[in-house]
Image (cartoon, rainbow over the protein chains, first blue to last red):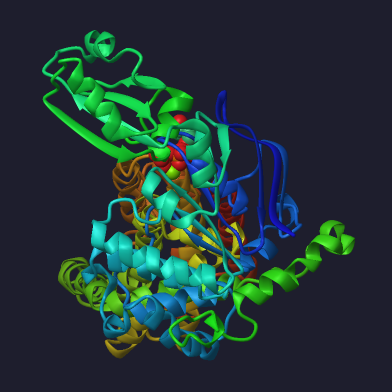
Length: 306
Length: 302
Ligand SMILES: Nc1ncnc2c1ncn2[C@@H]1O[C@H](COP(=O)(O)OP(=O)(O)OP(=O)(O)O)[C@@H](O)[C@H]1O
Ligand SMILES: [Mg+2]
């Protein structure tokens, strides 16, 4: 059963094509991600799915309904966490939930009954009466999520849920999202962090310049488009391209970055030994598992996070 | 077992997970796909009003000076201070009308204009651009018209409050002295709305808040001075009189002055004149409303 089905979905702003004919399908209960760099078209896509931005071309159904004609009905069943928190900063935490719940036509009593459990879920119970302005970035993000859950949505759209948060705040947030997923809420999120996509997504698409360049589970994408391990070598060189010859034949593929070489290999330590045996001495060397970052680099020739 | 998890707000019957599965029937049910949209499920303008009211409850103290004290200071300075120079003995500039009463019955209208402008400039622009309040509202079932209506109902409340307090004080000071002065309150409110809706449309259109300086300096201040608030329009050269009659404020002042001074005054109006002034203000408010909805839709639905 698909909650979202888009075919040939396009978004244009004047002559500019932000989303260039993508196909997406998200099933109930799934965690689905859009991974891509700045300007890839992630927010534009999410806004179309959220029925706030009109579709420029192609077809889109959310809960089986057309956003062009049934926007309020779709929105009534959605939770939306936008890229930037738009909390009512001058109001208290509790008031934020009340005001927002009323937007959905919920009664004061309904909202009040949901406030306690939601704030507990968001770990904000002690902040119930605090003015939002005084909360930390991570708390605000969690409040935005709590607010988005006020109508008990079956589908939650999260646009870069953890961008700008410190590592600890991100982990707290991931944990909350796991919980929702386990309770059967369908999550659709965008991110430009590969670790986030690996943590949260059952399935994802890699977007670049308005197009989908790859699709699959994080694991299958890595298996398909990268090697098992990556050996990173840093040299004392102005241009690392000059050093490619030194490592010729060792790796399945070599990527040249501004400050290092990436060697895609099955066995990183083995490859490092081979490099040393050739008498090549990098300033530093690092063996790591391949990630979605490598997939992205492979597919687009560019880094995910600039 | 996850449903037993007390910590999760969604872990109970009718939780999102179940809604998701139940909701799937919409896909199979062709009626849902092509049928007309049912009554919008959101909270409508009432919910939007709820937001503005909640904010007002937190900041109302800071509005006391501009909303209530400033007009009374004008009344004291212009009405009593300047009035003492203008009126001498039994002779008044406008026959039979003490200057303080002349000014009070005009100020209530001017103050409505000021309030309307204050509530539909930075508030609207900020909700669009700085605070993203409108973005947050529009991901919920609220529609653009709900946003405009809820905001305007809030402005209506503010206008009623401000005009009501002013008329109350003016009556207590005997600066107004007719039972009909109470009807000047809705007249001032209508006059305020005649400004609120077009200014809302303006605020939803401009790209930079610099536009508000222009509005304040070249529209609001001149209208404040040249709409018959402090002196009759007939004192002006004909060119400025025409400008004065285009201004909704002139028409509001005509209404509030007639009502505030009562049927015995020289400035009372024939019924048809009442009707014309009301119709003119309603036209501004109505056209402004349509423009406001259109401007906000263009701005938000992209
Ligand atoms: N309202 C708009 N008018 C004109 N261009 C727009 C508008 N919104 C987005 N764009 C352009 O569309 C492209 C895609 O933007 P979008 O916000 O969807 O990217 P994104 O993947 O979400 O990026 P980020 O990671 O920075 O949030 C960008 O080049 C952006 O400048
Ligand atoms: Mg974005």
